[in-house]
Image 1: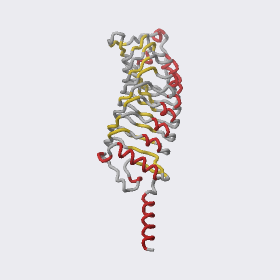
Image 2: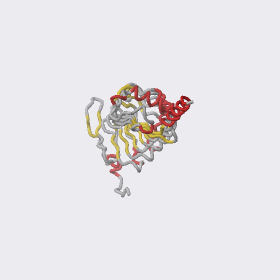
Image 3: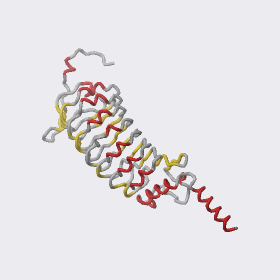
Image 4: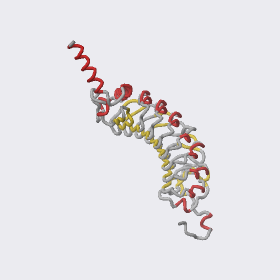
Length: 285
């Protein structure tokens, strides 16, 4: 009888210890810990303690809803199992030493609002499955080694406000669907290998406040429709192969210096003496 009672108490203790999170979520986090050399993390997890006590983990109603391991010396590859944290709303792995590709399984995180994998050494293409995250508000993948093209279905992210993919090796044209992302406020695609033209449909991005495309291989006329974006406060499209003229209004945006690269690789200052200078001077207020 004594043994039965003892066993029962041990069972209750074990259940209590895991009361803060489901066993499935705990197993997934342990996979992450093992895959990224958890023993060398700055803020290590004590796997014998409740998951809710682990650094960077937020638990609500026994479910992991946020995981922030920013600047924590994670090293290795992101495990596919991370895509099974079905209730995850925030995933921040900024400034670590993660390598390999971005798992396509992250596209299963339907509740995700923030995805920040920036400042690592991730490589390969951005999985098209990421565009299934219809609740995503912020996508930050900058300062990695990502290549390939931007997903053609990028426009599915209709709630996205921040798109930061600068300092990678992204190539190809900006997908047509991009110009339908009307919630975008901050777009940072600079320092990549983007080609093609900038569509006049950029005028659809009425919420845009910061637009950075500098240091790419874009060409053609800069769409004059950009000046209709009344919320735009900063723009830098320098060091591309744009040609033609731009309006004074565009040239006077905070960070815009209109330095371009011609076909011979020589930098020159784009001509900003345009038609608008011939119109009567009127207030733009």
